[in-house]
Length: 70
Image (cartoon, rainbow, N blue to C red; front, side):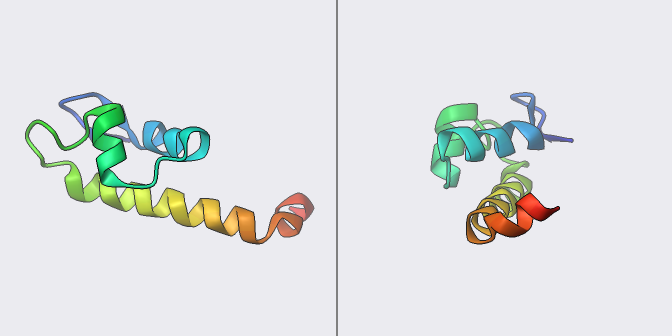
């Protein structure tokens, strides 16, 4: 889904940066993708996607044996 129409950023773009680049803050998202730098309407949604991606990462790190069993 598109999160930021002004900069054509999707939720997958955000999740990818969290996984591969270790992005963990809105400031880093703004610097990397330009999220919430133009009209700002995407800020709340971008923060939600970021928080979900970070939670997924911590769950994966916490329980790698359960992920392997799935």
